[in-house]
Image (cartoon, rainbow, N blue to C red; front, side, top):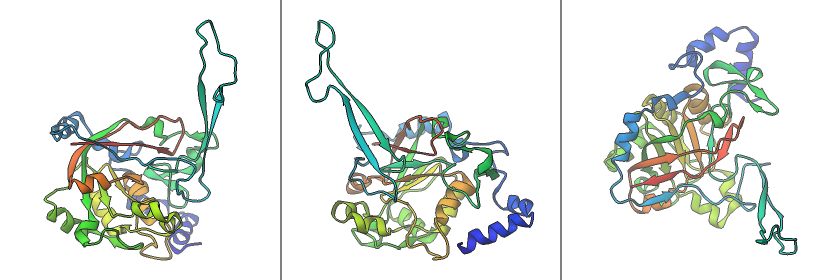
Length: 311
């Protein structure tokens, strides 16, 4: 078992729950909170973000999701068209109505996706100190479900790390933390504010177009210090043009998705994976109206999404 999780497991076994609680729970939003950083959003933030729209240009941030989409094993996607798709069935009614339906068998974590607060925890403990036994059922989670999230409408910020670091595609394992994120933001004349959704452009999504195996073997991304700093600013969500958002191989080889733990588990900050930031980066768009009305799949901990940036 990996070092960090082993230590946490020993603490729990020794009855050290109170010590853990002092570190990252209860949440600043209250011991019963289930929404995390979405609590920062309010109508005033939405109104202010809407004022960023000057041209009406829209950007689809979601990638196409299909059977060929690279995905974290064993996640898969399968589509079946049902009913009269082959044109041989009997039409209905005097108006000869025909049609097709979709049957999808898909993991929610394929393609562009949002990670909810029930997705990843620390030794079976999730956001706000909630133990898996208290909310995880085989029919879906009873709290932290994607269906419980309100729409995320706020200011979006793009930090173009590829441009700042002078490479069209950053290398796998290249971590960027507070100092580099601050420097990139300053160079792009943008400030990260409370309630923002922060997206990073690393160029990594381009790798998926030519080498899907390499795309899934690693990625550039946020380091643990960068994640903790962003959370301290009060951001609602952090995303990137990569499948896991954080740098892989991990900064500490003995740890496993520590940035996910820092953002989701400890701070209630949502994660947006496989965001297509290429058009925004090409237009040097540093801020925009971000709009996400996620599908309300009851009990899901993730969901395939297509957020929209509007300038």
